[in-house]
Image (tube, rainbow, N blue to C red):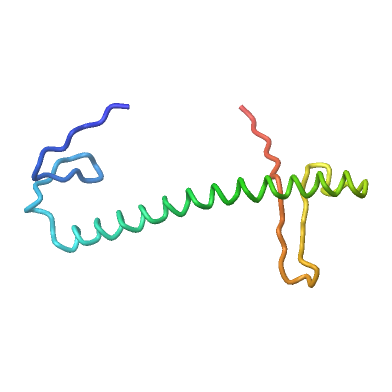
Length: 104
């Protein structure tokens, strides 16, 4: 991937044009800063969510395996979907696999 170097004193706009910093409105600079800050936070959260998802999938698979070993129970449908809920029914975790078909 080729990365262009932007000279000091310029910002690149959405079309790829170099704009001198002094020609950029303060509100545009503030918007840019806000968006970059929030995107950085969202990317960090995305990484945490990815790790949580892997943990959840592993724990659910282990529970399904444990249930099958101890009680001979088969949890989940043909596609492996499963719903686990607390004893009082207040909370639920669903593992669902979507089926997609593509055509060329």
